[in-house]
Amino acid sequence: HSVEWFVMKGQSQFGPFGGTELVRLMQEKTVFEFDFVWNSSMKDWKRLAEIPEFSREKIQNFKTAFFKREHPRHPLK
Image (cartoon, rainbow, N blue to C red; front, side, top):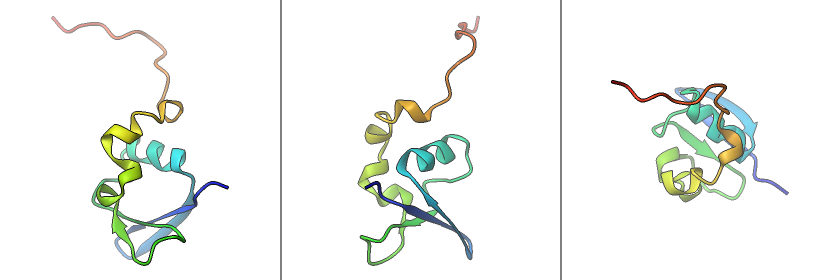
């Protein structure tokens, strides 16, 4: 089964979210590396940046979480 993640922003808690959903929230700038997250296998809340599953290297593997470009990129001149 997949891990259910919860997010704490200030005094408010949100969730549960799947890992892919959490990456999408990061991409949308709804959740940030300094926000706290928790799942049932953890004793305490930790900052998202402290969770190995959400390191930059790991989230690059979440290709399905990222929006597909409608148009190709064009270089700036």
